[in-house]
Amino acid sequence: MNHTTTGVHPVDERLPNGRLFTLGLQHVLVMYAGAIAVPLIVGRALKLSPEQVALLISADLFCCGVVTLIQSLGMTQWFGIRMPVMMGVTFAAVGPMVAMANSLPGTEGARTIFGAIIAAGVIGIFIAPLVSRLLRFFPPVVTGTIIAVIGISLMRVGIGWALGGPAFLAKIPDPANPGKMIVNAGYGALDNLAIAFFVLAVILAIAKFGRGFLANISVLLGIVAGGVLTAVLGKMHFDKVASAHWFDVVLPFSFGAPIFDPVLIVTMVLVMIVTFIESTGMFLALSDLTGRKMTQQNLTAGLRTDGLGTLIGGIFNTFPYTSFSQNVGLVGVTGVRSRFVCVAGGIILIVLGLIPKMAALIESLPQYVLGGAGLVMFGMVAATGIRILAGVNFKDNKNNLYIVAVSISLGMMPLVAPAWMQHMPHGLHPLLESGILLTTISAVVLNMFFNGAQGGSEEEIRQAAMQAEGGH
Image (cartoon, rainbow, N blue to C red; front, side, top):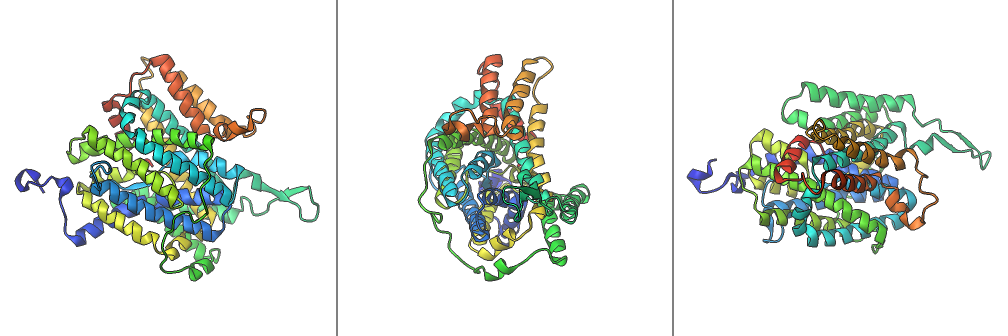
C-alpha cells in the first residue's frame, strides 16, 4: 500500500487479522530454531533437570514475545523503535554464560547468570544514548572478527551435541575401579551420529531445493525431520511431555534471588555493547528496506529496548535480547513492511511460552538431533563474521590483517587451552575463560592502535548489517 495516497506509511499499515496471523507465524517459524537454541545450550551446560530446561525454553519464548511487542509497538517515546522487528536471544552472550555454567553448575550458577543479565540490562538502558559515540570503535574489521569468534566458540557446542556431550565425556569414571576412567561407549555412537548427519542433510537439501519461505525455515524443518526419525526408531521418549501442563504462567525468579557477580556483570555489559552495535546495523538495514528514516531518537529507543529486554529476561529466567537478523532479511524477501506483522508474531510467541507441553517436547529432543542443526546454526554465525570481514579493506591496509589474526588467536586460547589462566587470580577466571571477551578487547585496542578511532561510520555499520543478513 502506498503511503503517499493513503496517508499511512507502510510500516504503520494495519493488515487484515487473518493475514497478520499468517505473516506473524512466518516470522516466528523463521526465528524459532535460533530462539530455542540458547536456553538448550545454557540449561544443559548448567546441568539443570529436564523440567528446569523446559522452564527456560518457555520463559525464553514468552520474553521473546513481550520484548517484540515493546519494540514493534513502541510503548513510549523511550522504548520501542516502532518498526517490524522480532526480538530473540543473542548468541553473543552464550560464551560467557557457558563458561560460568561450567565453573558453577546448578541453580546457583543460573542465579549468578541471571543476576549479571539483570545488571547488564539496567546499565544497557542508561548507556544506550551513548552507543552512537562508541560506533567508531567498532568498524566492520572489529565486529566481523568478534562475530566469527562467537561462531567458532559455539561450534564445539554443536559438535558436542552430535557426539553426545562435551569432549570430557569421551571417558567416564569406572564404576568397578574408582579413580580410573574408561571409554564412554555412548560417546560418538555411530547410530546417533547418523541421525545428526541426517538432520544436516535435510537442512542442506531444503536450503538448496527449497524456495523463499521454505528455504528460510530449513533448520527448523531439519530438526522436525530428525525428531520424527528418532521417534520412529524408538530413541525419543515423551514421558515429560505427557506429564507437562497444557497451560502455565511464566513467573519471575523461578530459580531464586539473583546473585550479582561483578566480574560477570562487566562481561555481560561488554556483550551488551557488542549487541548494541549489531542491533544498530540491523536497524539501519531495516530503515533502508522499509523506507522509514532512522532518527537518533528512534535508534536510541530501539537500543534502550535491547537493554529493557535484557532486564526483563533476567527477571523471568532467560537471557539478553537483540533484533534477529534473519527476520530483517524476511522483511526484504516478502516486501511486507508493516510492524503489526511482528506484533502478531510477538503475541504468538507469548502464547507458545504459556504452553509447557511445547517446551517439554523441545527439551525431549535428543542432543544428537540438535547436533545436526547446531553445526549449521553455529557455523552460520562464524560465516556471518567472515562475510562482514570480506568487506574490509585488507589490500590497502594490511594492518587490518594483524587485527584479525591476533584477535582470533587470543579468542581461541580458552578453546584450545582451557587451563591457560590457572596461575592467574581466580577472580579473573570468568573473564579469561571467555574467548569472545578476549577477542573484543583485542580487536578494539588493536584497531585503535593501527587505525585510530575511525572507520565505524553509519554507512559501514549499515553495510556490515546487510552482509550479515540472515546470519543469526
